[in-house]
Each structure stands twice: as C-alpha cells, then as structure tokens.
Image (cartoon, rainbow, N blue to C red):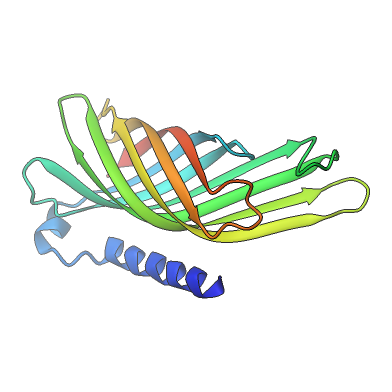
Length: 189
C-alpha cells in the first residue's frame, strides 16, 4: 500500500506544480486563483466535517468552457457509542486530500461544473474506554463530482457540490465508497 500512497503523493505534488507553473502563456496572463472553504456531510462515519480547496484556471483562452485544476482537503470527526460490534465510545476521524480537473460553463448567474480526480484518504478509530484499541487505514481513491456556483459578486462565489468517492483497497474502512454533499464559498482573485 505504501507504493500506491507514494504514487498518489507524487501525483499530488506534480499537480500542485502544474497549478503554479501552468505552461500556457495566455492562461497565465488571464488566469485566476480560487480559494474556498465548505461544510461537508457524507453517508459514512464520521459524517460531518469541513473542506478546503485551491483552484487555478488553465486553458482560459477557451471561449465558453472554464477548465480548472483543484487541490482539495477534507476533515471529518465524530464520537460514536458503538463501533464494529463493540459497545464502547469511539473517536472517529478521517481526512482526505486530492487533485482534480474541473470543467464548467457559465449561464448568467449559475455556473454548473463537473470534475474527476484522484487522492488519498486516511481513517482512524480510537476506542476510549476499557482497553484502548485503535484502527487506522490509508487508501487511494478516485472521485467524480458535480456542482453549481452562484457568483453573487465577481470575487465571492457560493457553491453546492455532490461528490462520489470510490476507495481502492480498503481494509479498516467499513465502506468502499461514499457520497458527500458540500456547501461553501469560493473566493476568486
């Protein structure tokens, strides 16, 4: 599993370099950056968390389509009374980070978009009573997502997004995929 994790980390670093050093001169002259934060809820424990994202326009010379690269991070935490048939309180936390490509089209005050990406997800469970036991797992994943931005100002863009994530090779995770909904604000400059 460390081999795959190293591959994902190298891809992540490579895409961050692409975000910073986009080789398209026209895109650099007209490019914009975006920084966003979101509240996220998903259908797996832990279910509630927050997300951060950094985006950059690429291929901004295209007339209608907005193509962007995204680096994103999400963190979820919860305490449950029962975990894996053990009736003891358990602290759960999960985080994921990844890279993705996004494409969108502006329709007046709405901007729908879709995207796909790769990343790494980590999960930890610590039982807090009696014999303290812990479980952890790291996995790579792919995801597909779609959403809509509502540009109320040229710089401030609230958004809603649905993301489907499929884990590759899960061991301690109680699921192999999950869905999440995110509501947030993007600042573009």
